[in-house]
Length: 253
Image: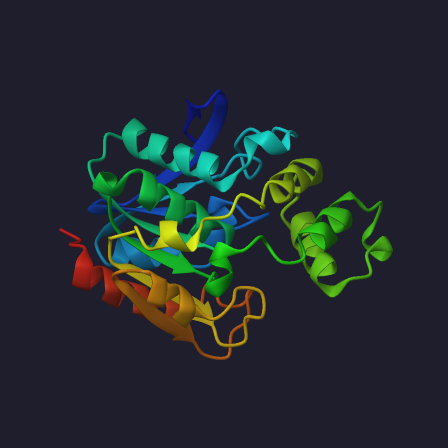
């Protein structure tokens, strides 16, 4: 994978297709490949005439994996996204983030509004403005000797996913320890770009989409029927809704 250096860390990315650029920011314990390529998002976007650009957040995928929580506040990870936009010489992009990636995209849209035409917050609703629920349980699960030592259901879910993606669990624990770096309601209210909040109707981790959309000056809601946090990622309703949103606010030509 190609890479570049941001804030002293090597950040991997991949680019697919041609057209108006869409930068895709994955969720916790995932990667650009797992979150966006394997779920069909890259094909969906490139078939629609967009250039799909995935980033591996630091601590994930092929990027550097520091073990210091100070490296992982979401506003710092947003700096890596902005640095990627600059690295590729892009003037403006659409951002799509899922779960942790949605929070990163919120900070990026706030920090560099001139570079972000519109933004999709997937898998994160009202809980955008609070600390990550179950963070301590997830950190303990990542540090456990084995899955058999993990009792909590949320911790087990993330430990299974981290093992599936062959992640550096110490780096993930450091990343989760930085989740106290939340974005405030006032900051959300300053994101002026068109924003779509897309959450599964059975997602108990993200909070409902309506309260977050109500804080956004140009917020819209997409409810993904019968999907929880893990299963909403590649859902056809999610993809169709995002394509309609992009067609409305962002040209593919």
